[in-house]
Amino acid sequence: MIKLVNDINEANCITHAGNMHADDVFSTAFLELYQKNIYVFRTPQIPSTYEEKENVFIYDIGLGKYDHHQANARIRDDGIIYCSFGLLWESYGKDFLEKENYSNVEDLYQAFIKDLVEAIDADDNGQFPKIDAPYKVKTLSDIIKLYNPKYGCTEDINDQFLKAVEFAKTIIIEELYSLSGRIIAKKHVLELLPQVKDHVLVLEEHMPYLEAVLEYDLKNKIYYAIFPSNRGGYMVKALQKTLTDHTLRKPFPKEWCGLDEKDLERMTGIKDITFCHNGQFLCATRTKEAAYL
Figure 1 (cartoon, rainbow, N blue to C red):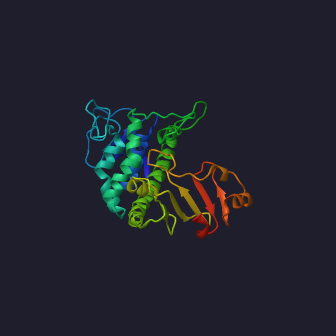
Figure 2 (spheres, rainbow, N blue to C red):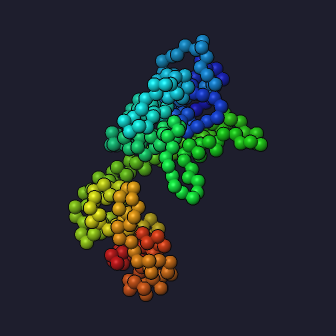
Figure 3 (cartoon, rainbow, N blue to C red):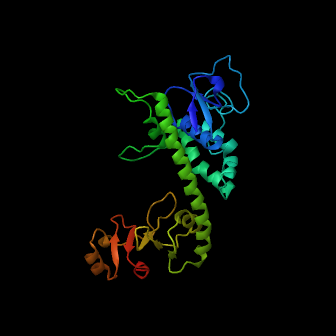
């Protein structure tokens, strides 16, 4: 439960007022998940008369332990500057995961940093990536900014802040569930990789597999992965070279792409093949036998 309060002495969470950003919003969302009941005071600055209390979190303001605007703000070994979200996760992330009974706490704690926390920290500190694309790429920070009151609208900024926090809570929860599943699946996939034959990884269930394969198979010996589709039937995925190089190791033939089922069966000579993606990286079949191509 989160409640905004008008008296700083009633608050156990204090952050800045005005326009919201991913840092203060995700920090607040995490604190609500961790503390369960929080009373938030949003202020332009910490009053000089305020006396800090135990068990009160002051973040993204005040130049204290959970702020990052001071000249000596902490920097990670990889060059990414901490923001409040990262500092709070560093202090309480493992305790939170243990209290919520997640397995693989250490792996999950680190994976959450790499998959979400560092991106928010970097963006909030102006450490933007170079993206060469003919379209606008929206980050989570961009999405959070949409919750700020819009010109010409009569939205209340505190109501919008609460909406943004609720959204951020959902992202945190789903991210942790996703990462937890990926960690478990990765261990299973790593056990299968030494048994791969004919350059094809065969999975008996739909699971995250790509990260494990690309980290393990550095010589690009595995060309395809076969797995049950959550739409029914089977998928055959042509694998990319590395996590950062999306060039396909062995793409499907261009002449297969864009055909309807009958023409595709006729072209390939494969019964029960139903689809080949125009990007040459994915085929669908009705049966496991057909998936072997």
